[in-house]
Image (tube, rainbow, N blue to C red):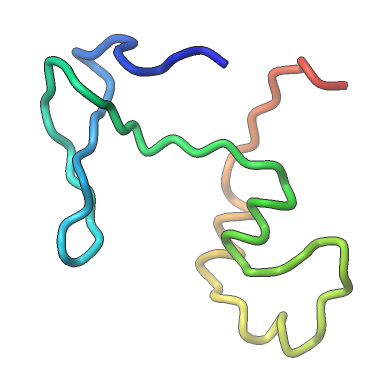
Length: 87
């Protein structure tokens, strides 16, 4: 995996540690550890993180009724990028 640490530091957003409310704000840095807030998931780990479900198991009717609508919309409306490296 390519190291994203200092790729185009002039343009890349770098984020600090979360504050008391859990919000990470953009900050300027010239050196040290970098947090781009980039996450890489498999479909299974993403669904588990976003909807707290295991896609290998049936989804109950009650689950569909309690999923946050914003998260379902993000799954449908968000872009999926595929680099073609894995068949």
